[in-house]
Length: 485
Ligand code: NAD
Image (tube, rainbow, N blue to C red; front, side, top):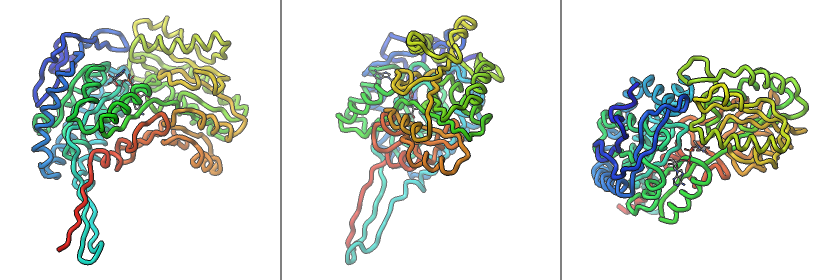
């Protein structure tokens, strides 16, 4: 399968409406995670490439900011149309470079399209506020203005949805944008740029610069970049937040996670197992909202037995095959890192419910692994760190208070879920769970485009989250006019 029009040997950057070679000779391989066959190569672009993109975006901003808001929105309507028309092809590209199951990739494309839908409401969203008579014969008005050139740095796990959390809203608000996609999933970004160009976006409004650290640092330090949106792992999120903020930029940095699911004794067993399984093993555990720790309240032996049975029946394989739930993790190194956590736990005398090492022998060509440990305690490394792989820890708690205490102790606070039919437990969970996105009998409580994606604690650095009114506020600044007539 051909990946994109411009994939012959090395992907190109997209700058000022044109496909251009990077200044760098250095490239990284982009393999298919299910087979490790080479798909293409991505250039490790330089700061000079970033400078070219920033210059183009800065120039484009001069006119784009003055394009009437409804006309800007019309570009997004066209983009929406093209994304919808190419929904299946986009999903296949995600499976190819990321490895997740087609059904999940299809869902990801849908989540991305919804971000475009939301951003196309810019004429309403961007409305300001007025008050006549703040003093005698004096009125006040508030208008929203774009910031300028915005940089977006994205992770490998949602190659479509995460870029679409960022650039449609930023651009609808009148900004111009430079996207630095993950070097591990760079293919889809070029297809998105292609479709955006076909939607009538003028040259320079959206630019894509591929690469790794140098491109990121180039964006963080560039004096002509007004704001940076970042999504990725915790250490990098903190680094990006601090470095860009030190340069006086507006920053939103979405970070890592350790999401706890509390299973109460009264939970519907089948539904709890089904939700935990798909949250833990779907997308190979590589979702920032994936369940990685289950807190079993009370001695719920039937739940443990049903979970074990379901885990033993996991269908493993290539994401393009129907019925597959467990797909590969992104790289062999990633699988080896997860294996390191597993081996450490085994050395400490772990209670293993499912041993993922068998997939490594049975399917050596892909990066497969699925493991469950029981009787993990909150102080163990495996319970505290984000592994970002299908490795699940079961913790035991005597009651809901203790379960909530585990969540409070975690330095992450992206999501948490409770499985119960008790209104009292739900209310206590809602009030006391120390995380920004909660699920009540929902395995992946990710928010829709019109609400903020609102991680807490070390899962987020900044003030305004992506999406919803937060996204709008992040990509606009307010101007107040006080008038005496
Ligand atoms: P990553 O941090 O390795 O990479 C993210 C981006 O940062 C990439 O574009 C990469 O090129 C760049 N980068 C990586 N290391 C860098 C460095 N040292 N200096 C400068 N730039 C660097 O993350 P990933 O592995 O691609 O993605 C998975 C992570 O993203 C997980 O931790 C996951 O929880 C997180 N994530 C969080 C959310 C959220 O909403 N909170 C959503 C998706 C993913």
